Length: 43
Image (cartoon, rainbow, N blue to C red; front, side, top):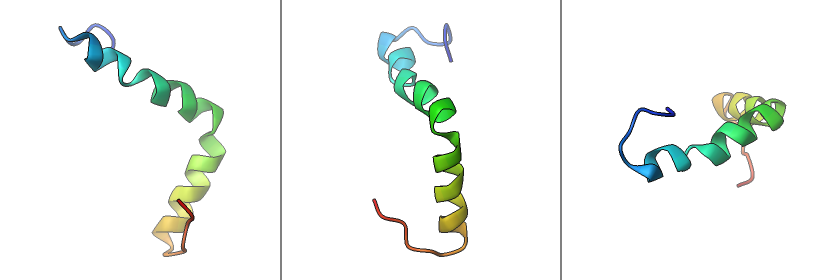
């Protein structure tokens, strides 16, 4: 996404997600798996 927009917010808004996904990948994948199987996942 970097360098693809003229708006500074376009790049900056993605930075927290880009940082969190690699750090918490296992937790994200577990949550996705549970939701796909219809399990209740706390929010």
